[in-house]
Length: 373
Image 1: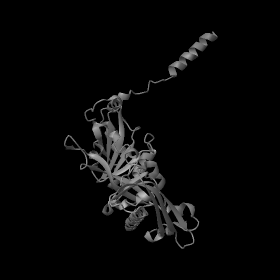
Image 2: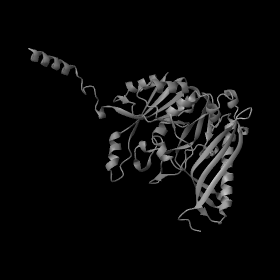
Image 3: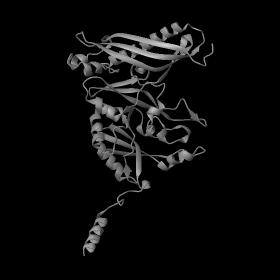
């Protein structure tokens, strides 16, 4: 009798066990890789980019170039981002899955008017990840999501999905993750620079046809929850010496026909406390390798010219930030974090070009092993 009861209990437990009954086959869902969000005439416009993961898998064993990989882009509208996504779901051929979304592309109108809505949407959606990349574009979001990669590779192999791989060297606009945005958005000092995406059709062709490559042309600035405007790549040139994120920079003194590779520049920021408002000393240090020196200039003279040019770059970005009343370098964070009892936030936020007490640049340049005179 006891054995019969035990068998019945085990049988009931087996019936209640769901196992994998609720799982969906991989081909039964549409996997999103990026979301684009626009805001016009009181409505959110949501773009859903989906890639064919079967094509991505083929890349590993491919021996020849394949045909261009298809990209599915959905578009939905609504009074909220949730409503726009619901409209997309209701008109999809397969269920939409956003757990693999790796990037967000926002319009200028969103960051200017509806940034809090976007942060709230991502924050309460459990499938969206805080380590997703964040971009802004002033172009048609649909065209950006449908841009090209090299050799007909999927769009996963572009700056939209892999910014660190593309801009790891010789680029000074740092990629931004959603988690970084959230950590700084409500901060009472400093700024946030969101990289700006554009479609470049001028530099690469394939069989005579222009490739539409997504690239960065600057950044959109937020400070104290307010939109401050767009800053071009040219005006952000000083960022590469202060950010401490670039590993290699190629530097040219065109008139002197000198080319130098600057490696791993580091900047130290020191706060001067004995002042009515915080003042800062900046010290930039880096080593370099001489790549070209057609006029055979003296090495010390080259170092001096490079140091002067780096200081000019930093001052140019400082002046750009002053025009939009923003600390683009986030130098004032030093005073806010480590000297909070010395000055209040209003005084710390009075940062401008005159807040820089001194900029010291120290560059040491050596000949490359394969350099020829």
